[in-house]
Image (tube, rainbow, N blue to C red; front, side):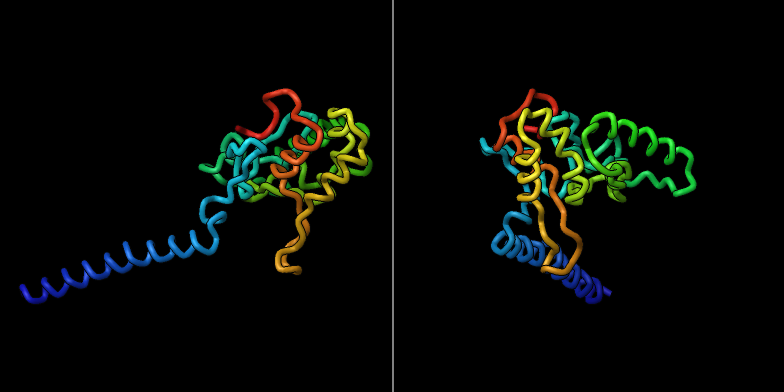
Length: 201
């Protein structure tokens, strides 16, 4: 019996050493060597070097001088500790009421925008943390952003187009715009508007 217990103990110790120490250290070291930015959270810094967020997690922007992200149902909104969707289906009256109110709010805030409100600006993602918009949803907001910043819409349009990310590996996914990166670029190009509505510092 003691021999069996000693064998089991040795197997346990070796397994813990390999899977609990050696393997995690090896993977962590390799990721820090090959993909250090991604391994450390894909953090984004502003022009002063302060961390203002991650390119993987959306943030809420409320100021008219910023491009707004899609809505979030994660906790109180964009909460990475409570990632989730609303779980409201197409037949939900609550969802229809919320979308109707959101469309009215967006149209009132963007009176010079052309075309219908892009669907992603009124629907939350499954995670509630989506940091991206389609180019069309970002471009739809150009008139409001340009007016709030006192610049020509074409200059804001060019800034949006410059921030468009292509498909991964050239064929996976869709072109997209990272909202945080775009808003930081707008601040760098045109100056930062009043405090309280921009990237977190």
